[in-house]
Length: 184
Image (cartoon, rainbow, N blue to C red; front, side, top):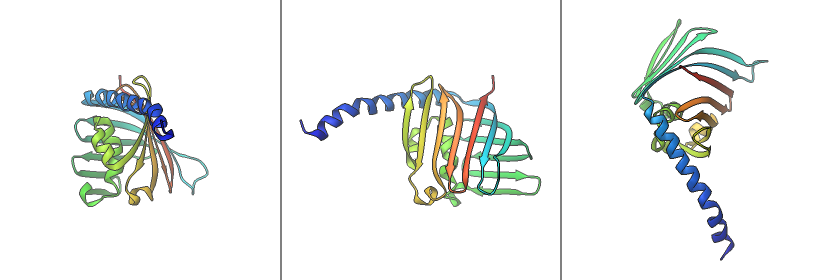
Protein backbone atom coordinates (compact mmCIF):
# COMPACT_ATOMS: atom_id res chain seq x y z
CA UNK A 1 0.00 0.00 0.00
CA UNK A 2 1.26 3.45 -0.81
CA UNK A 3 1.42 6.03 1.94
CA UNK A 4 -1.40 8.06 0.33
CA UNK A 5 -3.74 5.04 0.16
CA UNK A 6 -2.91 4.13 3.75
CA UNK A 7 -3.65 7.67 4.97
CA UNK A 8 -6.93 7.72 3.04
CA UNK A 9 -7.92 4.38 4.55
CA UNK A 10 -7.22 5.74 8.03
CA UNK A 11 -9.06 9.05 7.67
CA UNK A 12 -12.02 8.20 5.43
CA UNK A 13 -13.99 6.44 8.18
CA UNK A 14 -13.65 9.52 10.42
CA UNK A 15 -14.72 11.85 7.59
CA UNK A 16 -17.69 9.59 6.73
CA UNK A 17 -18.68 9.41 10.39
CA UNK A 18 -18.55 13.24 10.72
CA UNK A 19 -20.71 13.55 7.60
CA UNK A 20 -23.22 11.05 9.03
CA UNK A 21 -23.40 12.97 12.31
CA UNK A 22 -23.75 16.24 10.41
CA UNK A 23 -26.63 14.71 8.44
CA UNK A 24 -28.27 13.70 11.75
CA UNK A 25 -27.82 17.23 13.14
CA UNK A 26 -29.19 18.80 9.95
CA UNK A 27 -32.23 16.49 10.17
CA UNK A 28 -32.77 17.45 13.84
CA UNK A 29 -32.55 21.15 12.95
CA UNK A 30 -34.94 20.74 10.00
CA UNK A 31 -37.62 19.28 12.29
CA UNK A 32 -37.82 22.56 14.25
CA UNK A 33 -40.30 24.65 12.27
CA UNK A 34 -40.81 27.48 14.79
CA UNK A 35 -38.68 28.59 17.69
CA UNK A 36 -37.93 31.52 19.96
CA UNK A 37 -34.77 32.14 21.91
CA UNK A 38 -33.14 34.92 23.86
CA UNK A 39 -29.62 35.99 23.07
CA UNK A 40 -26.71 37.86 24.57
CA UNK A 41 -24.19 39.05 22.02
CA UNK A 42 -20.75 40.46 22.69
CA UNK A 43 -18.97 42.32 19.91
CA UNK A 44 -15.28 43.10 20.18
CA UNK A 45 -14.39 46.07 18.02
CA UNK A 46 -10.85 47.46 17.64
CA UNK A 47 -11.98 50.98 18.52
CA UNK A 48 -13.57 49.92 21.85
CA UNK A 49 -11.78 49.09 25.11
CA UNK A 50 -14.31 46.43 26.07
CA UNK A 51 -16.94 44.37 24.25
CA UNK A 52 -20.27 45.89 23.30
CA UNK A 53 -23.02 43.72 24.79
CA UNK A 54 -26.53 43.49 23.37
CA UNK A 55 -29.55 41.39 24.35
CA UNK A 56 -32.72 40.43 22.63
CA UNK A 57 -34.91 37.81 21.04
CA UNK A 58 -34.46 35.52 18.03
CA UNK A 59 -37.53 34.16 16.25
CA UNK A 60 -37.36 31.45 13.58
CA UNK A 61 -40.22 30.36 11.27
CA UNK A 62 -39.21 27.71 8.73
CA UNK A 63 -38.37 27.68 5.97
CA UNK A 64 -36.83 31.14 5.68
CA UNK A 65 -38.02 33.73 8.20
CA UNK A 66 -35.51 34.84 10.81
CA UNK A 67 -35.98 37.82 13.08
CA UNK A 68 -33.47 39.30 15.50
CA UNK A 69 -34.96 41.86 17.90
CA UNK A 70 -32.36 43.69 19.95
CA UNK A 71 -33.79 45.36 23.06
CA UNK A 72 -30.57 46.44 24.83
CA UNK A 73 -28.61 48.71 24.66
CA UNK A 74 -30.96 50.09 21.97
CA UNK A 75 -33.89 48.76 20.02
CA UNK A 76 -33.24 47.32 16.60
CA UNK A 77 -35.06 44.83 14.40
CA UNK A 78 -33.44 42.75 11.69
CA UNK A 79 -35.85 40.62 9.66
CA UNK A 80 -34.91 38.26 6.85
CA UNK A 81 -37.75 36.64 4.98
CA UNK A 82 -37.24 34.98 1.64
CA UNK A 83 -35.04 37.30 -0.40
CA UNK A 84 -35.89 40.41 1.66
CA UNK A 85 -33.79 41.91 4.45
CA UNK A 86 -35.26 44.64 6.63
CA UNK A 87 -33.35 46.67 9.22
CA UNK A 88 -35.29 48.98 11.52
CA UNK A 89 -34.02 51.32 14.20
CA UNK A 90 -35.51 54.49 15.62
CA UNK A 91 -33.58 56.51 13.06
CA UNK A 92 -33.79 54.36 9.96
CA UNK A 93 -35.82 51.88 7.99
CA UNK A 94 -33.75 50.08 5.37
CA UNK A 95 -34.91 47.30 3.11
CA UNK A 96 -32.96 45.44 0.45
CA UNK A 97 -33.02 42.33 -1.66
CA UNK A 98 -30.39 39.72 -0.83
CA UNK A 99 -29.92 39.24 -4.58
CA UNK A 100 -28.57 42.79 -4.76
CA UNK A 101 -26.20 42.19 -1.82
CA UNK A 102 -23.99 39.19 -2.69
CA UNK A 103 -21.68 39.87 0.25
CA UNK A 104 -24.57 39.82 2.76
CA UNK A 105 -26.42 36.69 1.60
CA UNK A 106 -23.73 34.23 2.78
CA UNK A 107 -23.76 35.82 6.24
CA UNK A 108 -27.54 35.48 6.41
CA UNK A 109 -27.44 31.91 5.12
CA UNK A 110 -24.87 30.85 7.73
CA UNK A 111 -27.61 31.19 10.34
CA UNK A 112 -30.75 30.67 8.30
CA UNK A 113 -29.55 27.56 6.43
CA UNK A 114 -28.23 26.10 9.69
CA UNK A 115 -31.59 26.61 11.40
CA UNK A 116 -33.35 25.09 8.38
CA UNK A 117 -31.01 22.09 8.41
CA UNK A 118 -30.07 22.98 4.83
CA UNK A 119 -26.55 21.58 4.28
CA UNK A 120 -26.79 22.11 0.51
CA UNK A 121 -27.15 25.88 0.93
CA UNK A 122 -24.39 25.97 3.56
CA UNK A 123 -22.03 24.18 1.15
CA UNK A 124 -22.89 26.67 -1.60
CA UNK A 125 -21.34 29.47 0.47
CA UNK A 126 -18.93 27.77 2.90
CA UNK A 127 -16.34 25.14 3.41
CA UNK A 128 -17.60 23.18 6.42
CA UNK A 129 -15.64 21.53 9.19
CA UNK A 130 -17.93 19.50 11.44
CA UNK A 131 -17.16 17.79 14.75
CA UNK A 132 -18.99 16.29 17.69
CA UNK A 133 -22.08 14.19 17.99
CA UNK A 134 -25.82 14.82 18.10
CA UNK A 135 -25.64 15.70 21.82
CA UNK A 136 -23.05 18.47 21.25
CA UNK A 137 -21.82 19.55 17.83
CA UNK A 138 -19.73 22.26 16.25
CA UNK A 139 -19.54 23.57 12.68
CA UNK A 140 -16.85 25.90 11.45
CA UNK A 141 -17.89 27.71 8.28
CA UNK A 142 -15.19 29.26 6.08
CA UNK A 143 -16.51 31.52 3.30
CA UNK A 144 -15.85 30.33 -0.24
CA UNK A 145 -16.21 33.83 -1.70
CA UNK A 146 -13.08 35.97 -1.52
CA UNK A 147 -15.36 39.02 -1.13
CA UNK A 148 -16.97 37.57 1.98
CA UNK A 149 -13.65 36.17 3.23
CA UNK A 150 -12.22 39.69 3.13
CA UNK A 151 -14.73 40.64 5.85
CA UNK A 152 -15.37 37.35 7.72
CA UNK A 153 -12.72 34.68 8.17
CA UNK A 154 -14.96 32.13 9.83
CA UNK A 155 -18.27 31.53 11.55
CA UNK A 156 -18.46 28.90 14.26
CA UNK A 157 -21.84 27.50 15.23
CA UNK A 158 -22.32 25.17 18.20
CA UNK A 159 -25.40 23.38 19.34
CA UNK A 160 -27.10 20.42 20.92
CA UNK A 161 -29.45 18.27 18.87
CA UNK A 162 -31.78 20.56 16.93
CA UNK A 163 -30.82 23.72 18.84
CA UNK A 164 -28.20 26.35 18.05
CA UNK A 165 -26.55 27.60 21.26
CA UNK A 166 -23.55 29.67 20.15
CA UNK A 167 -22.69 31.68 17.03
CA UNK A 168 -19.22 33.17 16.80
CA UNK A 169 -17.97 35.35 13.97
CA UNK A 170 -14.35 36.22 13.38
CA UNK A 171 -13.91 39.17 11.06
CA UNK A 172 -11.46 41.84 10.03
CA UNK A 173 -13.53 44.48 11.81
CA UNK A 174 -13.72 42.51 15.07
CA UNK A 175 -15.25 39.39 16.54
CA UNK A 176 -18.65 38.61 17.97
CA UNK A 177 -20.06 35.84 20.13
CA UNK A 178 -23.79 35.25 20.52
CA UNK A 179 -24.97 32.95 23.28
CA UNK A 180 -28.47 31.66 22.54
CA UNK A 181 -30.91 30.35 25.15
CA UNK A 182 -33.76 28.44 23.49
CA UNK A 183 -37.27 29.10 24.78
CA UNK A 184 -38.85 26.31 26.74
